[in-house]
Image (cartoon, rainbow, N blue to C red; front, side):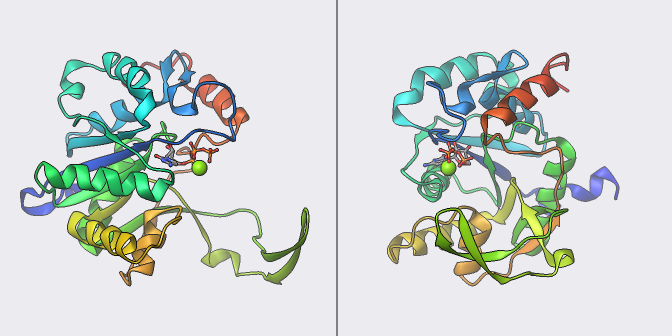
Length: 252
Ligand code: CTP
Ligand code: MG
């Protein structure tokens, strides 16, 4: 596919919501993982820079914890001025990821609605232009789309029956399984409506927007993700990311 083919057709506008309001409990430590440094720069700085570097994305809506303003300002100060210009004022996140995404979408809606929106985890600093291009192309064509990669482990569906023990209920065919990542890409109005419906019906706790879109009855497609686009989830992921980014130029 040529690079041109990934541009949204007809001058459509693309915005991104970056959810960075989590506590990073599994990584541990005093500072939430998105504000920890990998290769000398905060995870969030790297994530924002990767998205802002894309000529396709014109606006970025960060979602942060209300008490993290100072950490956030430090991240932004580390960005090139041209990148900073794409950033909307951050909005406060909620108690769940779903609430944080909803806050970001409402933030975008207040300042002029884009045609497409990418929803991305602050904890995934390895996102690159090729993945962004695939996300935009899939969202523009299909309305609701998520990046996924084939799994190499066999996955069991279990039911917990004792601490640490699950009874196996099903072994889905591995070739039909995908491990899902972000950026997830949607027609903005479709995702905003789905989130508003979830709020109206008291549904919370969807761990990704693909699942929320499915719940809302939207057909969701999976496009090709990127095995390098790992989410920093455990302490070891932070160490590995630090190693991966050390010695790599910032803008790469
Ligand atoms: N997130 C958010 N608001 C929340 C929960 C999560 O904005 N209430 C964001 C996180 O900051 C992260 C992304 O959603 O960028 C993915 O969540 P996850 O990896 O689970 O991060 P945390 O919730 O911070 O980590 P943990 O679950 O280990 O506490
Ligand atoms: Mg979490």
